[in-house]
Amino acid sequence: MEITLLDGSIGQELVKRSGDPATPLWSTSVMIEKPEIVSEVHSEYFNAGATVATTNTYAVLYDRLKTVDLKDQRFELWQTAVRAATAARDSYGSGRIAGSIGPLIASYRPELCPPPDQAAEFYGEIIEEIGPFVDILLIETMCSIDQADGAMRAAKKSDRPIWLALSVDDFDGEKLRSGENLEDVRPMLDQHQPDAILINCSRPEAVSNGVRIISEFGFQFGAYANGFTKISDSFLQDSPTVDALKQRQDMSPNHYAEFAMEWVSFGATIVGGCCEVGPDHIKELAKRLILAGHTIV
Image (cartoon, rainbow, N blue to C red; front, top):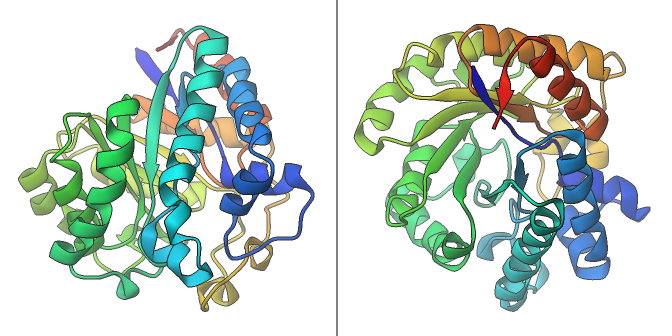
């Protein structure tokens, strides 16, 4: 089977490698102050076996930047992120670029997101800017049906393939983080017809449950989990920093690869990693995929 191997964490890797204290700007501040690290991280993932570089644009959105008086820098930051991914891909000699688009306002808090029609206007700007320079639009960590609907409305105006990634409850993979049943996403998917549907940024145990459900939806599907113990209550406050989240100590590259290979056994054709899943995890996963007779594309 042909498998697309995504990279792993971008933002977490940048924060860790920068050596700077965590801020609410997350990896955006690292890209402003130390842009060279971004290309280094992308290159390391390609060398580990990934075939897709995900741009460091997840949180580079007007509504997030305006709270720290950086909204006017968003165009420059989008260009910086795309250039970094493209340079790493060109240096490696092959691969695709996925333009990352994260939730408006805050991750894991869909109740704060504007209604779909308003959200589509905000998302339209970044999609228009980065769309021509990426191979895929990766809408990430959508935690409610309305949240995903708003992003999809904007993305459909682009001519790029759209991969929609939904985040499920850490301990109940049958529900979105909003509490809505994952099964109830189907009408929205049927309306918008994304090119792939994924489960992301949840504990791998919950992701496995979610993958079982989306495998029945009739779309190309996949998954990439995080390595957090859970999304903590303290992270769900205003202006959180990533040090409010704890890394699991049992999520070795070998252990993570076992989860990902399970998703492949369900029929997933796109796998990779999210927060706290690094190059060593992707390298191990690439090895497992090849040993199992799959072709990484």
